[in-house]
Length: 127
Image (cartoon, rainbow, N blue to C red; front, side, top):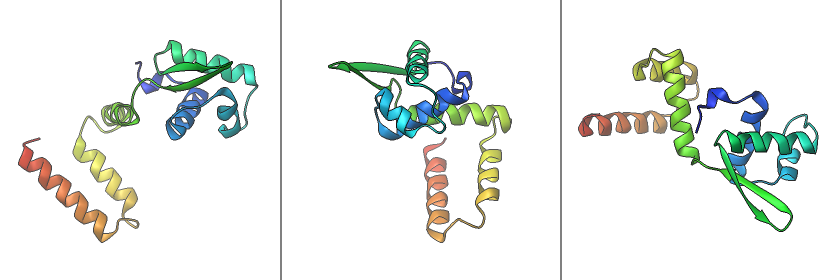
């Protein structure tokens, strides 16, 4: 699968919809995409996403049902690694510091405790 940065804005919107729904037809994408283009434009974009290796499909009667080739978790990790390398000098510390900075008003005591536990677990595992 090519990197997420190779996706256009519309392609990213479609991928977001399909990840959210787990799978979708052209009509379902049309129902969920903002300012939708034509049916044929969505079909063409789905075909492009298949050619890029992001989607695959199965046929049910006359309909194609599209679904991701890569799990949401794997895609999330890949996107995060790209973001970390591009904007944070490949530094986990810089990423976490930025997240804490933008989340300072919204971080509950429970969330903070969970983060402490995750860091401690990572330390024990030697990562």
